[in-house]
Amino acid sequence: MPQETIYTIAALVTALGIIVGAVVATYRLAKRIGDAIGVDDKGRTLSDRLDRVEHQLWPNGGSSLADQVKSIHVDSVANTAKLDLIQGLLTTNQSPKIGAPAAPKGRKKVA
Picture 1 (tube, rainbow, N blue to C red):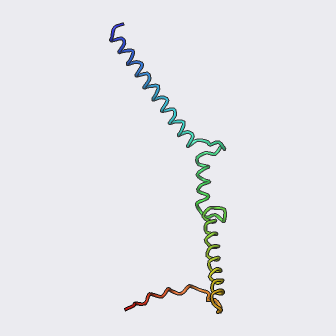
Picture 2: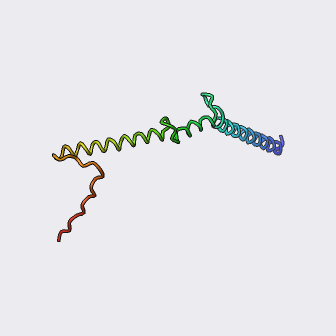
Picture 3: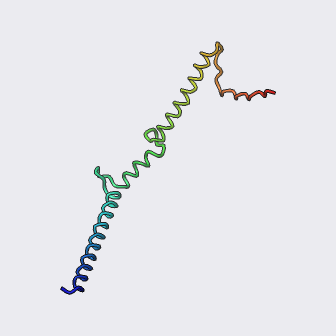
């Protein structure tokens, strides 16, 4: 076999390998995009899944994440007020003062 024929066959095999590799890479990329955008295992589309996420982000009457965080915050503020009241009763014999806490006093200068 002449040497030019060997080089030609090698070039064709290399070109064929590159073409097959490019087709396989394109197929994998298209499959990943299709999996991300297409229908999931539960039959939901991307739009359905995003609607579900959006539902959790905006207050809607109690079932969203935002509503639940607000409820926890309100409960936390109420519990803090109750604890302040109990602490005031335990530390002094006076009736507790309900309202905003007094501003902290500054340090005295020592000369």
